[in-house]
Image (cartoon, rainbow, N blue to C red; front, top):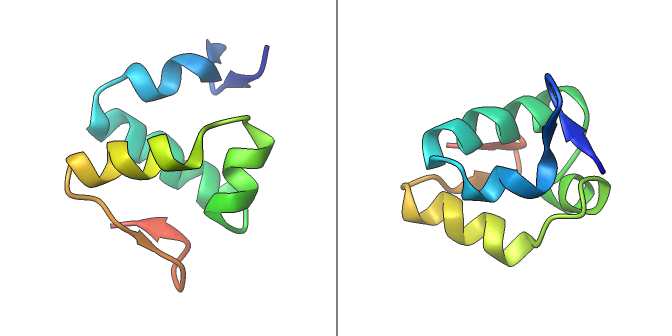
Length: 69
């Protein structure tokens, strides 16, 4: 099973509070992945589900900064 940070299973990520997901995803984008596509591929996430989760909390992906804002 793929892990995030201190051992949390990545498949639980999208079930978490949107603000926590925002923080974790932006950290992964900043330090490990050059794009959302690379992130979802590396961590076996559903891209549409991730985008929807972020959108629900008012965050939108900016490809120029490679961050959700």
